[in-house]
Image (tube, rainbow, N blue to C red; front, side, top):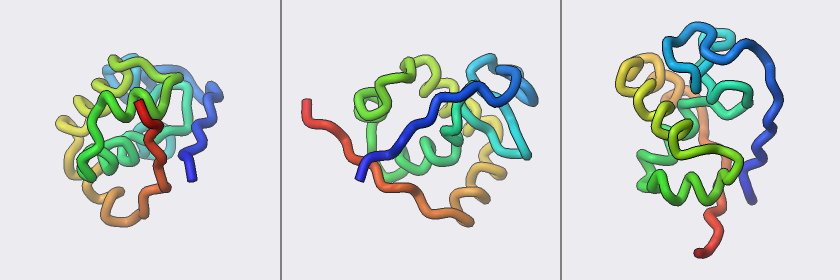
Amino acid sequence: MMLKVNINVASEPGLGSEDPFIEVRNNIAYLAGTQVAVWVLVGYRRMGISLSDLHRTLPGFSRMQLQAAMHYYRSHKTEIDYLLSQHSLPPLRIPLQ
């Protein structure tokens, strides 16, 4: 099963964050203008999926957006770790190179 990425602008980019690539809605950080939560991307990284593989799997996102998610995690580790402990990651299929 592949992660379905729904790119819909839901609020102003950067709302609740100093980073224009991150927005916070209902106390959860997302890549700005999307429904992709930072905790999901961090969870995949913890599973050993590289940023390059995430970029290939989520081609609508730039490397800068994905790096911004990791930077946000380093600044908000406690809240992201809590979300990871409370949720299961959706399945992710990485395309062959």
